Image (tube, rainbow, N blue to C red; front, side, top):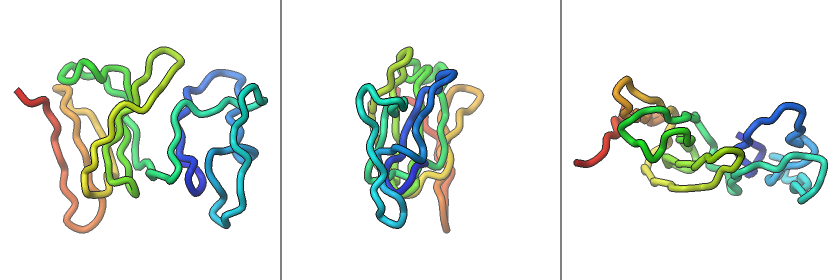
Length: 135
């Protein structure tokens, strides 16, 4: 979770500097601008970012077999974004793949023993949702 806007996914590499608090793709909470990442600059830019914020609640790297197309990818629960977000990861590259609006803040994403995906909503009346493929 970043500043006001600027939530990001970084693929961490040894010795790299990711810039915070000197650069970001967001703004400070007092609305003072933070310089954006620049191509070729001294800081490693995020692979994926959101502005406005989606307020990530959790992140899971999927390793199950029920959704083989997601293996090795990130699944992110979004609080203010009220969504489940799929980020495709291929080697040292990442890209936004899917975003499913859930209509509720998603606090946690976890993987069950059979590869199912569990989502925990946030707030009063929160539900635990179990995701499995349609057959």
